[in-house]
Amino acid sequence: MIKQIFLVTAILISGSLATQAQIDFKKANKSNTWLKLGLNTALPISSLGKTQNFGIGVDASIQFLETKASGVGVKVGYINYFGKGNNDNVGVLPVAVMLRYYPESVGWFAGLELGYAFVNGLDRTDGGYFVRPQVGLHYDYWNFFGYYDTILVQEVGGSNLNALGLGVTYNLHFK
Image 1: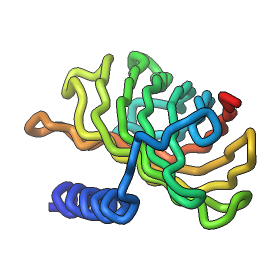
Image 2: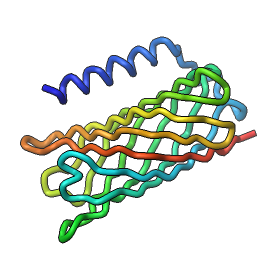
Image 3: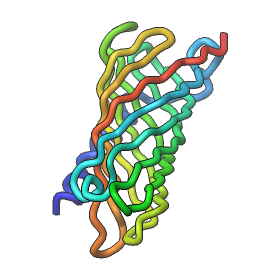
Image 4: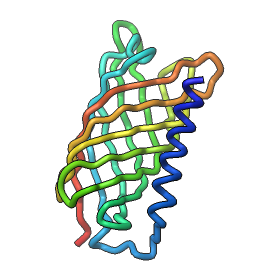
C-alpha cells in the first residue's frame, strides 16, 4: 500500500509541475541549457542497508530552463553500493526525467527525478521505478543537495531499495 501511495504522490507532483511549466523546447538555446556532471554518496537504508555499506556514484544530465524558476531535463547515472561482509556489490543505473524549481537565481532549490533504475547484483530484482526527491543550494556553476532514493521493485516478494544521499554537480554552460 505504501508503494502505491508513494508512486501516486510522485506522479501527481510531477504532473502538476509539468502542466504549470508549459514547456516549450523550441526556446532552448545556449544561454538556458547546460550539461550537469555530478558526484554523489549514499547511505543505504531499510532492506538495502542490511547487505550494503555505502554507495558512490556519478551523474550526467542536460537541463533546460523554461523560466528562471523552473527547469526540466534528462539524467543518467550510476551508483555502486559496496557490500557488507560476503555480500556482492550492487550497481544501480537510473535513467530519469528531472524537474527543478528555483525560487531565486541563487539559493535554495527543490527537485524531483522520476524514471527507471536498472539493478545489477541483487538476486531478487533487475530494477524498478526510480524516484528521487531532492533539496539543495544552487549557484551559477555548482549545486549541492541532499536526496532520498527509492527504487520501487517490480518483482513479487522483492523489497524496495532506499537510500539517503548527498550530491554535488558542476554546471557546464554552453555560452
